[in-house]
Length: 221
Image: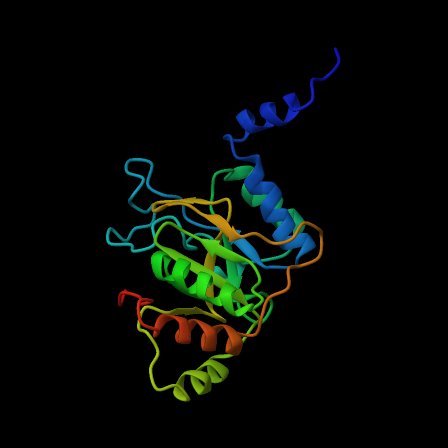
């Protein structure tokens, strides 16, 4: 019998829990872009807003590593296939740091306004990851020393900014977490090459400037 286009994908979707794109995306991140990834802990099936980890007060439900731990993040194709074959709905977690992009994140509403302000200046940005509550601008790897010097030189830095560098993590699209779907606000350009990302200095300078202008503010959370 001739296979109907798309039928095999639908069958695979049912077979592995309905999310084959998670495996496909995890393999793209790991093997094509060389971004170390690992599966995150899934949301609690008894309550999507809760996390599957032991912490009942978890503030990032389903969007963080647990078992395996963050240090297990890898670009190895066999390991990535094994993880998402056995846990097909697990969120994809990026280990930020020297071997992968870092990120600067801020509350979603403020991020939307800040991106609009940056667009008006003509600033070039790389991919932007959007969760329901916070957006993250991917940037080139930076050290904590580099970040400390950058922030020290500023008169004011909004407390709502978060920095994901070495030893940190970030859930990537198309993961589903306890807070909702992770998506691309600014998607990487098609192709196998790892996406370009800007330096952290340029992003922090521009975001802080945008957030401190009249009418563009961010709540302190």
